[in-house]
Image (cartoon, rainbow, N blue to C red; front, side, top):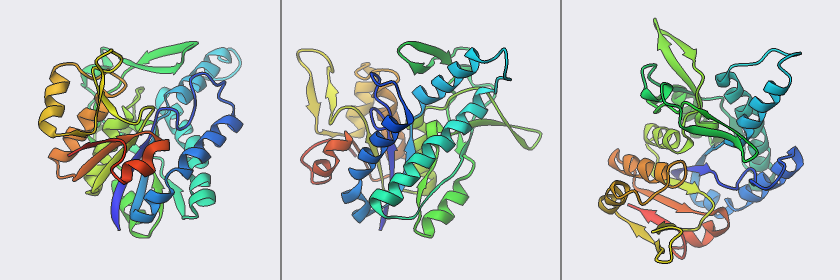
Length: 281
């Protein structure tokens, strides 16, 4: 079967208005994974996911307890949340999709001189508490060969959780850095390195919209690379929302990918039939 890399985002894991208890998040994960049933019959799957609220909450917990417990650096928190969310998703894939799954704690190479370290722009946390952190551009998925081997052996692989753990290379050795890599750009890097056919971005809305939020907004059912680039230049898409998905879509297609589908988990089945969602190709 062809390979699809599916990025779980938006309300897939936690709702902004919910407190984010383990019970609520697990319930939401199970519901999201259940929407992948028709996809799992057509594609071999690799799953990625966001973790901004969760890693922000963990950082906040540490701030509250720093007088009694040592604080961990952000790259270590990235790994902790990868394990937490990967565990829940892995359980859901095996319980709901009845497929063997495995979670890979994934490292992502970034450039230590990336300008993002001087100008942090990535918000982590929830509405009540947020922190701006560096979000460097991913250069390479370091653990991709391990992921390829697992895919070849028919595992659903959960990788690049939260965009992966950002690391730099110093004197031939990898070293973690305090940052958060954008999930959508990391998803593109992973999909391109795996030579996947398709990326599917699951988000809060069933379409990409032109003039989103305005009275003149309209859904874009199909989006060419040329129009995607034009709309990016016209600032049609929001930072930290649809913009990185469109940027990642363009890069994926330029590097040989066949198709990108952007929709909500609830509309995925209809989108696979061409009745919902935005196709970028």
